[in-house]
Length: 68
Image (cartoon, rainbow, N blue to C red):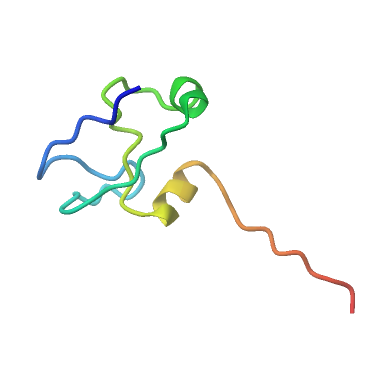
C-alpha cells in the first residue's frame, strides 16, 4: 500500500477541496482503501483535517442522552 500521490500546490482535500500547504490526513486501512476509495493515485484519500475525513466517510457523533 502506498501513500496518495502528493503534488505541492495542486493536491486538494477530497471533501472541501482546500489545497494542502503543510500536511494532509490519509486513511491507511487496506480494507477501506480497496473497498471504499476509487482512485489509484489516492486523490480521494487526502483530507485537510479529521472533520473533512469524517464528513467524507459519512461518520457522525451520536450523543447518548441518559434518562433523568
